[in-house]
Structure formats: C-alpha cells, structure tokens
Image (cartoon, rainbow over all chains, first blue to last red; front, top):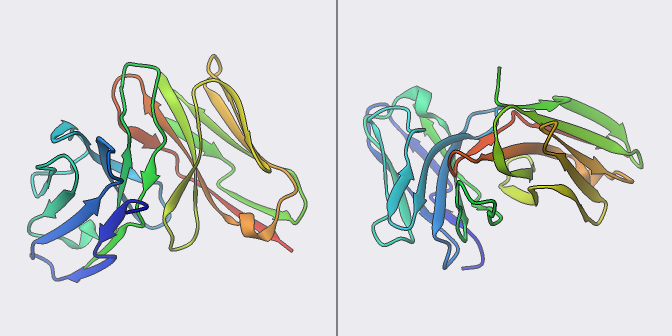
Length: 119
Length: 109
C-alpha cells in the first residue's frame, strides 16, 4: 500500500470487552510504533518494534495492553478488559529503521489512527 | 516539567503573516521532528532535523542543539495552514518519540 493503514478507523466497545487494533505499515519499514492520543493532548508513546521484537514496551500503561508483530510487518495492539479511560485515538507509525544511539533516523509515516470509544 | 515544551499553545494569525512556533526540550536527542495534524486527520511529518536548518516551500525549521531549542517558521501564512503543529524528539537513549502538547494554529483570511 501507499501508506500506513490502520483498521478499523473507528471502534466502539463496551467496558470490559476485548479489542484488537491493526496496523499495516509501509512495506519494508522495519520500525513500527504505537501511540495513543487523547483529546487536546499530544501523542503518548506505547510500544516500539524493530522487526518482530518489541524493542521498547515501557509505554504500555498496564498488563491489559499487549502488542505483537509476528512476521515483522503487520502489528496488532490488543486491549483486554477495556475501561472508559482507554478511549483515545490509537496511532501507528512506521519508518525504515531507527537506531537509538546512532545519529541517523528515518522519517516517520503515520496512519490515520483508530478512534476507540469505550462505553 | 514536560521533556518537550511548545509555545505558544494557541496562535491566531491573519493571512500573510510570518509565524513562529517554538519547541524546547530537556533530553539528549538524535533527531527532532515537526509534525502537522489536521482536525480529525492523521499526522504528517514535515521535517526531521538533527542539526541546522531545513526548508520546504513556505516552511522553515531550525534547531540549536546546544540550546536544546527548535523553531518552525511559516512564511506568507494561509488559512490552509490551520492545524496543530507538534514537536517530537527522538531520544539518544532509545528510539521512542516524546511529543510536545502541540500548537493550535488558526490562520484567518
């Protein structure tokens, strides 16, 4: 595809339910990021993948949140026992690579996000 | 104190005005990003900087690594520039981005 694709674009669920959010990055991008954005605030880091492995998952708020990227391309963010406070726009971004210590980084490409509403 | 601070939070300008949005950060970085977000829309990367200055059309971004400060300038502003502009830094200690709260820019015709 031409860009980062996120599905669904909107998800409404009841408190306590399980949800899965999907991110399809740009082909060949090894770095994949999940962020979430609450209304009126900047995005908040959740987790970063380099290839198949989660290189940094320190932003996940608690153990109800989990993300996978089994084949190094598509990633799924999973939220168990959803709470109303989980309502936000969940953003995915990808880049060719990111080397934390190296001076080189490649531009990020963002998806349009999934708006999650927990009722 | 946030690691990334932007000013102003809100900015209203008349069409044609020169606009500056500032970003200060407190951590060591490997890169700084300027991003644009339209209402209800996705985020678009405008610039990625590690030093100096970059220009694209009417947009100019500068960074001063020693002072830990970056600015985004828009020349000859236009109503279609109305959006939230977000500064984000990529820390040298890892690969995550830390975002500022964003600057809501409104350009009136």
